[in-house]
Length: 607
Image 1 (cartoon, rainbow, N blue to C red):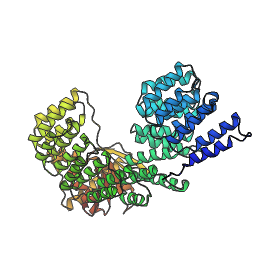
Image 2: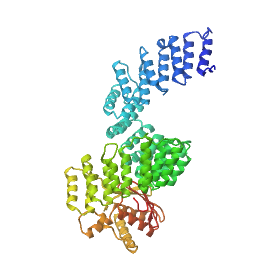
Image 3: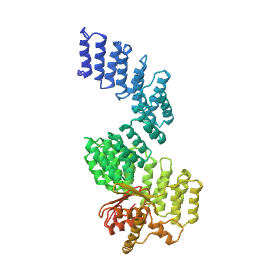
Image 4: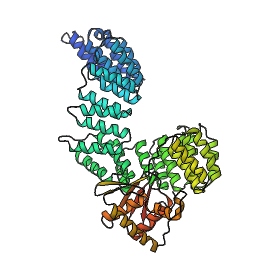
C-alpha cells in the first residue's frame, strides 16, 4: 500500500517545480521558498528535511537571517528532543549573534534547563557578544526558577554596566527574581527606583510579596496599584491578589477583584478560575466556589486540589471523596498535592476507613511516592480518631525517613487525647529532629500543663527562653465594613476597647442563663481559678466576636480568621453565642472552617 504524501512533502515537490522557473531561481527566491517551508513544519522530522534543504542550497552559512530563523524555529517549537537538535544547529553557525544566543537561552529556560541557559550566557560573555534587553528577562527568569540568587546578583551587575538598568522589562524581571528568592529589600529597591511603573511592574512586586507570604503587604500594594491612573492590573497581579485575599480572609476585596475580572475579561483562563475557587473556599464561601468549579469547561489537578482542599476545610469529607472519584473519571491522575487534600478531608471528617483505603491505593498505584506530608496526614487521621497505637506503628514502619512533620502531628494528638506516655515518646523524637521551633516546646509544655506536671512545664518554657526562640502570638481577624480588625488575647489596644469589654460583660451574663461554664482546663498555667477565668474571658476569638456584634448589622454573618487552632472553651462559647444572638458565625482556624448556627457547629464537635 502506497502512503499518501505529507503536506510538507507535497509542498517540497511543488517548490522543486518552481526552482525551474528562472524568475525564482535566484538567492532571494530560494531563501523565501525555504523560509515558507520552515513555517509549515509541524514536527522534528519535517523540520530536519527543511534544515537539510537550507544546507543543500548553501543558505545556512551564507545568510545570517536564514540561520537564525532555522535555529529559532527549532528552539521554540517544544517538540520532543528539539533542544538537543537546536544545540547541533547552533554549533553549525559560524558566527552566532546576540539573537542566536538569546534564542538558545530562551529555549533552555522554556525546557526548565536553567543551568544550561546560564552556561550559554557565560559563553556569550566569553566570546565578547554583547547581550541586549531581550537577553536579561529570560536569563533572570532562569535565576528565579532555580533560586540562583548569587548568579542573579552578578547578572544585575552586568545589566548596570551595559546601561540597561532603565529598561522596564529588565527591571520587572529583577523585581520578580529578588522577590521570589527572598530578597524583598532588593526587590523593593528596584521597584522604588523605577521612573515609569507599568502594570507588569506592580504585578511583579505584588507577586513577590505573595511568594514571601507577605499577604497584608501584597494587599496594600494592590490597593496602591488600583489607585494609579491609567493602570489596569494584569491577570498575574489579580491572581496574586486573590491568593493574598484567600490567606487573609479578605472576602470583600476578593469579590471586588472577581467583579473586575468579569467586567474586563471575556473569558477567564484556568489559572484565574482556580484562584477564584481557592479564594472563595478559604474565605468561607463554599457555595460560590462550587458554582465557579461546576461552570469551568476545563479543570486540571490544581483546580481539583483547590476544591477538594476546600471541601476538607469545611468538614465535607464525603463530598471531597466524591470529588476525588470524579477527578479520576475525568482521566486526570492525582498528584501528591491532591492526595494530601483527600487525606486531610478524611482526617477532618473522621473517615478513618476511607482514609486508609486512599493511602493504600496511592501506594499500590506507585505513581506518587509517599512523602512525610502524606504520612503526617495518615498519622493525623488515626490520631484524631484516638487510634494512637496504630498511629505510632505507622510512623515506625514508614518507608521513608521519619521527620518532624509526623512526630509533631502525633504529639498533637497525644496532647488532645491526654496520653502522656506516648506523648513523651513523640516529644523526645521531635526534639531530636527539630530543636528550633518554639511551637514544638509550647506543644510539649501544653501537654504537661494538662497533666499538671508543672516542673516539666517550667523546663519546656525555660528551653524557649534559653534558646531565644520567639513564639507567634495567637490572634483573630474580623472584617467589618470592608476593614479588617486584628485582636490578640486580652487585647485592650483597640480604639473601641471600652465598648468591646462592656459587650463581653453583657455576653457573659447571657451565657450564664444558658448554662455555660468556662472550661478552665484550657488555661495551661499554674494560677488560681479566678485568674484562669479572667484569662479565658479575653481570648482573641471572644474579643473579635464582641466587636463584630457591636459593629455589624443584626442578622448578618460574622466571619473570623484565626492563626491558631481554637480551644474547646472558645468552641463551646461560640456555639452558645450563635444561638443567643441568632447570628451565623464562621470561624476559620489553621485547619478548617467552623460554621456556628443555632447553638451547633458544622464540625459536629469533631476537630
